[in-house]
Length: 243
Image 1 (cartoon, rainbow, N blue to C red):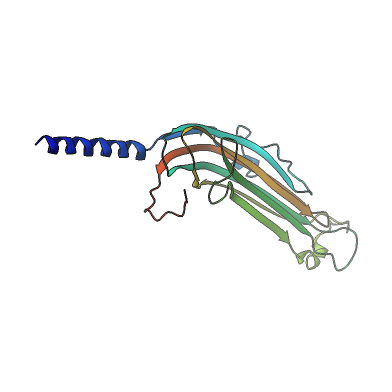
Image 2 (image 1 turned 90 degrees about the vertical axis):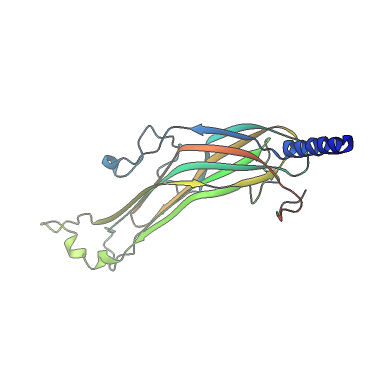
């Protein structure tokens, strides 16, 4: 009877130790400002939205870090301790391409083209490093490439003049503004201790225009939240992670 009790106690102690090692932890941080599309301002975002200092027009590639969310989590010891990091963001993209008639007098008119490219990228680091994060430390959450071109101005050239025959502007404008929510899971194995998880987002873009055309871009992020969950990966789980 005594041996049975001792065996039962030992089993309970072992089970408790296993559960303690496999138990998880959770942390989260949120940013609350929200992006909104302004109907009265041609679909641009409201001024109180957290936007980057993105130039409306840039003929050279542009990229700038815009914001971040940080969370701290304490992990247990043992093999297979892994963090599941999930930054969730509401992202907004604005693009405007406007093509106009060339007034140089050249017939046929060269085809005008306006191009806008804008995107939002999210990067994750743990304790200041992106090493070991799967599938990658940076992921593009949203990107749009918009190009507008037309040769219709050659067909409507006589209409692009006023009553006196003076050339008047003819143009074609396309505006797109969208808001959407995105999330992505980043996975990284870690050791015992307290870890600082940081998610940053940056905006990148470029514009191009020919024959007097114009192009503009804009972006917005918020609200957002980053959640960090401690997981336990066992050797027989079939996971692609190796410890």
